[in-house]
Image 1 (cartoon, one colour):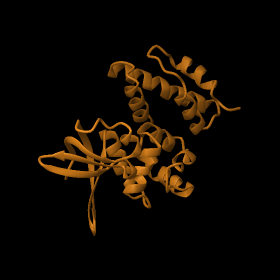
Image 2 (tube, rainbow, N blue to C red):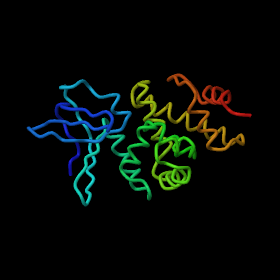
Image 3 (spheres, rainbow, N blue to C red):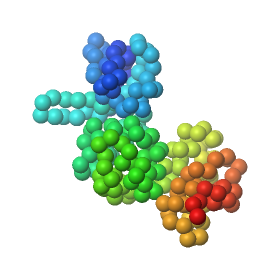
Image 4 (cartoon, rainbow, N blue to C red):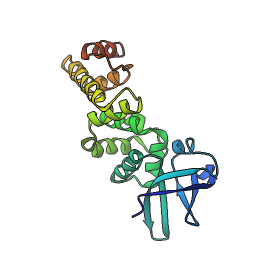
Length: 207
């Protein structure tokens, strides 16, 4: 199995979201998401793409991702009945890894159905099949890690505070989906307490 390919960005076909990475004298044609397409280095520069190899009757096709996180989510999307590689790539083009996690956890089928070729029913099926595989704690920790708010111990404390704020809103009678969306919209700092996060989240609640 090819876990990743590291080499030189030799060729790019934006209209097909196809890149050619040259390594060891071989050029590998790899399909990537539109989101990753915008983040590619310049022509001739070194690149590493984490890959997924699709085996088809008429040949092989590589799909690539700039992060292991996207590679992992891509494989999870393929486990959903009715979603193939191109559909999964379309979802990761329309939604970042963070947005996809929160959309699934918040039962936001509307956000997921914005991806090309993904209807409302397919989005609902995706949520149903992936919800148990995704954790709120992982979603917050990944979000906070990208925001570079501090060391891992700090992230753990802030993640816990956000989780408690979601639970508090739920206890006040809000749905888990509304609570999650509201807390997600808060601006985070390391010093914020549960109460401060809760107050900020309440400002985003719809009445």
